[in-house]
Amino acid sequence: MTIRSFDLLQNRDRLLKQASSLLKHRDEARPIAGGTTLVILMKQRAVHYPYLVDLQSIPGLNQITREADGTRIGALVTHRTVELSHLVAELFSGCRRSFQQDWQRAGKGNRVCGGNLAHADYRLDPPPALLLLKSEVTAVRAGRYAGDPIEGFFQGNV
Image (cartoon, rainbow, N blue to C red; front, side, top):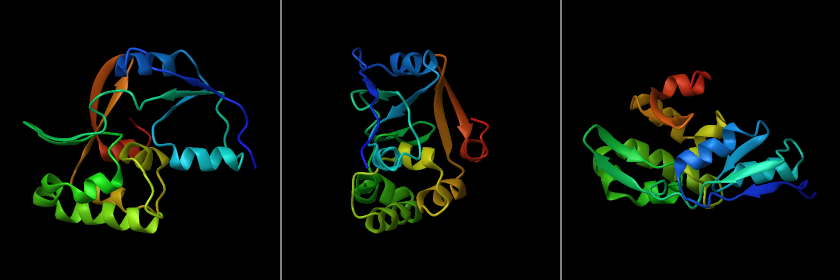
């Protein structure tokens, strides 16, 4: 099956706020980064979004960094990057293993962390590990950043 047509909205300024604005002003728009699950669902015609907002050009979303309040895993970090990260291995070995298992089971593709969480598939390994670590999800709403406990994300409160 082929994917129904859609417009890919480019983020020319490479800013998260611009991407958020594009999503806010188009009710039928969805973000796309790696697109592994989204593309499969669109090919199966299980979902259709006439607008996809490209997130790949936004700097920093593909990095793992240690910060004053914890460790930040960007939404575009691949499962393989988490698995190979010395920082994650040092601080969160169980979390690292869950990403490794998911990456191996999924056919060793380029799954990204943000898409994995957004898909909310109960069969995936990383979400339970992130719940046990009492992780937070940082979302951009109307140009403002808001950090919320990951439990709320899975309950639809974020």
